[in-house]
Image (cartoon, rainbow, N blue to C red; front, side, top):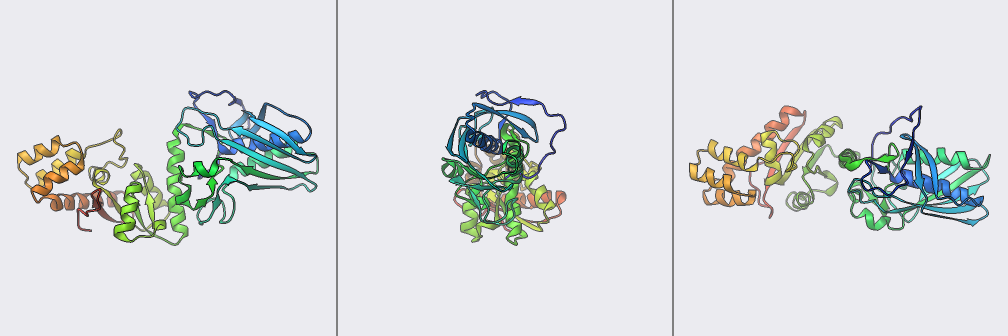
Length: 369
């Protein structure tokens, strides 16, 4: 879930997001889609069936296409927006986000979720436990925009629903964050920027908030799903104590330090963790590799002959390198030294106590910890 809201601009520029343009530099957030749906639903009550609507967002005025809308009765309406494609592999692209709105006699606007919108079950997020996962900025956007179109003195009960939300949620971080039953309605600006490696990293960092709220100050950081499964099996660790950091090691360790985490066990497959020994804190292969260079260097430090170092250097995977080291009885000494270097590198940068456990794909532990 996204973390920081941005201030509303004083001079709003019109932004047209109605066009289906997969090459567009940005799209709309689920929060903007929900807001547009809610406003269009209110307008249907007065017989206004519209194909496009302007909404006010922290980014400015957005023009958003309405996929469908209809009047339900004299005080209720329904509308839907399709979150159109843009230049980003966003799992919510092409998802229909809808709103049912009932106009009420008081002046209050109440917002809740329906089918396909998740509920928060763990503390540490922006939304309290038991509430629907509709973040604060989208809630404010819905209220601000509805106040402009509701009759004077009237309020509204808004239900945001996402017909395929529960299915799509399986492809998000929601289950790790304790959000069940659907997607989250997100957004801090109203627009979605391409792979928001920023948004993705923020969703990863939320795991730390959840773990801290559960009372953990000693966490296990793993690269991904394989590391998590092995940590649960080998360390008998509760899942709430395990944080997936993806390739963003440095970012996640910075966030852990900011949030007062006192101890971290770095646990994971050799192919990812050994990069940290060389000071590589973004482990994505296209950013930095160095696996064969690192293992070859540590073999040399331990006195391996030239043929072994050459064989390591020609290998394609760390598993292949481990097979070579196994034949020479060098696996443990090499990875013990690498593990110590990883710990030293991390403790030079962060005020956190570290342990390091390096494993193979089948869960063999390669170093003392």
